[in-house]
Picture 1 (tube, rainbow, N blue to C red):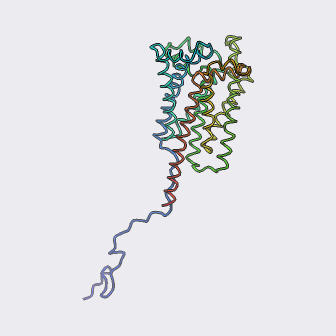
Picture 2: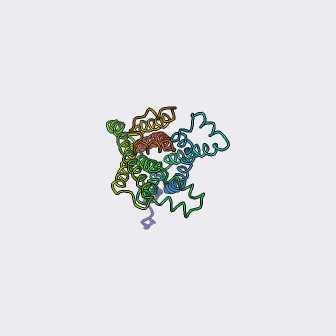
Picture 3: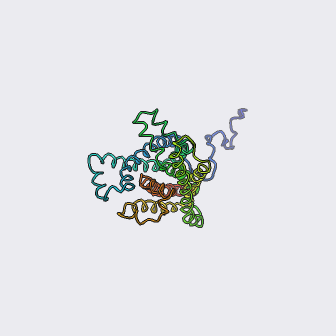
Length: 334
């Protein structure tokens, strides 16, 4: 007797493939995997915390360690070998170690750009500290009166003679340059060449504007003992200079080699100032408001810090761009 069960196949009829074949998983959608251009949340958090803590400490160490160099240059204390003898003496060795340690810490902050751009980018916020001194000249005095001596010495680097007024916006702008390099690892050749020529000029103009504002603020403070604020025009000039400096450094994201010339010129200018008898041969413009302030920034650690940061960032940006290009090629091959 033939079965009437519909699930039983009739003679000569092949069994249903829906019943005999196991269920297949849905096939993944075709197409290349997305290219990962950013960093993880943990990397961003750690680099931001590290940069915001280490950068002010490093700047303070650089300023403290470079103080004997500034005194030697501005006061003409003697030959360079006398300065070197002092630096390697028990009294001067701590300043030399502080200078070297501060520069290494700044380089380590730049190196965090390999993991995330957020750390360097967050240094932009620290620019508010030196700018606040222009608006409120008595701020360092109030800190000296209310902070313990050890904390005041640590915070002194945030306000001293324009070093951080240039260093912090440069580092913050270089953080944005890494963001651009991660997303556009292959900038157009014409744009890169234009950046090599234009970025150093904009950085020079921005530095002169910032130094002019700082020089006017220093003169105003010396005349009024900080009872009156900095003239508004000088404050505005300094702020515009800082913003232009930040933008110029950010533009190196599309022109990675544009940082090399400013770095080498800054380091060379710092070294040349210590040639015996050179100060007596400089034109009078170097002894004006802007020139004197700029020379003071260079020898107080600003020249070494800026040159090192720019060169270190060039290497970091090239590594970041190369990694981004490899990821793009791997994704397009899938």
